[in-house]
Length: 80
Image 1 (spheres, rainbow, N blue to C red):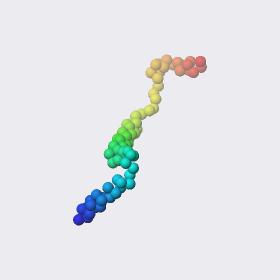
Image 2 (cartoon, rainbow, N blue to C red):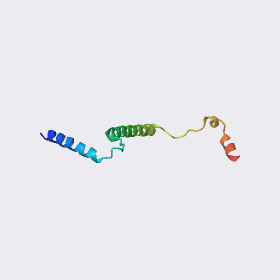
Image 3 (cartoon, rainbow, N blue to C red):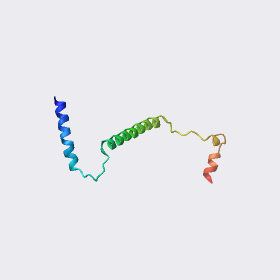
Image 4 (tube, rainbow, N blue to C red):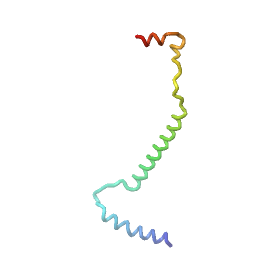
């Protein structure tokens, strides 16, 4: 019973609310909100996934392989 009365109340309020709105104004409506919410959730999910992948990366730099074999090669480059 309560579901039916809520439906009747909603159908009575929709025309009343529509008359108060300016007929020349365009609004995105429910579809615009749903599309925006889906895009926001997708971006949030992608950022969460990127954050997980970034934590797996080891950023510690090793010695440069080109200068590792030549002793004093890095000292010469620093003095110039």
